[in-house]
Length: 101
Length: 180
Image (tube, rainbow over all chains, first blue to last red; front, top):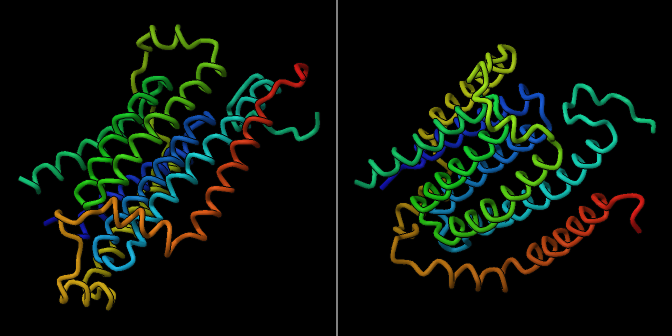
């Protein structure tokens, strides 16, 4: 049986890689990918803790909710990215600094 | 055997995630995300969450990744050139500020996890003492279905309405101005 610490360490690594992608990338799609990695690390934690919660199954249920939230976030985020690309012809967040039309 | 498979999946997830953030080519990075998501689904199986693993594959690999690839193709005219040129520099130089920030965060997380395992919460110790932890022979999917329809009915309805709102909003946002 694999202990909880193993899961926690793996998810910490994935979370920090996602954090690096969010901080360092110059492409809105890669930033979204970084956010997805961070959400996946959180889901791994949920699922790992759920093993000790047989009466409520809270971890697994909220892991499923987190997957749904991530899917909704990606759908809206990509719609925004497409609009921004149409407006500015770039998806580098550093070049997008005007709010007015 | 179980340990070995777990380490194999964990190594696959972490190494391909590292390659994902260091590669320059966005198309290749998206396909590496595919591998990361599959490896994470494998890791969920080791925590005995089979339904979550299947949902991960269906929703992420089948939905989110396809959406990401669509957005990439719609917002990048040099996709083909990007795929063909095995660029002059394969890896990008890591950006040291973000690197040091995320390494510091990793250190804090690892330290707190190791300090935390010495005094695990009471409910976990009690579950272990009772022997009421999940076992591989449990019928996960049936229990999950029952829980969704009884104990967690309110969050379930809220998330359903939220998902519908988000999808309508996304469809509205991505509509072209002229074509109505």
